[in-house]
Length: 109
Image (cartoon, rainbow, N blue to C red; front, top):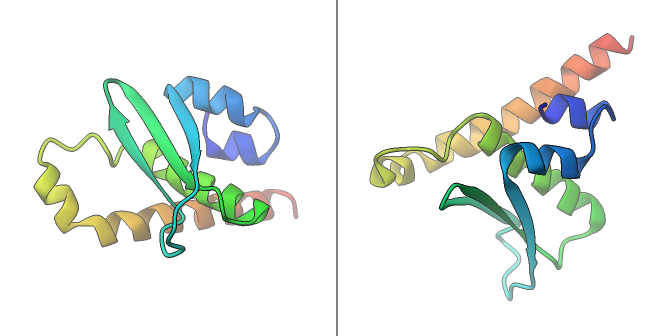
């Protein structure tokens, strides 16, 4: 089970969330610059999404946060080191989603 399977319609979002032991929490934030984030707490992934986003931005943000999980970026031993490389991890998650989308396009040609 992975994001590619979700995008291909082979599995549902709920199936993938169950597989990763993840939950999506929608929050109304007073600031628009943060679309979402994911946290790992007591063996569970908590995906926080800004509820003020449009439907499509929510979906894109959920995919991005799932990419962090799939790339195993949150299980870092040194949280200070993670904070130092946060931009790197954000770029990697975005590139990962683009890579999956390109693979799907190529397969459908």
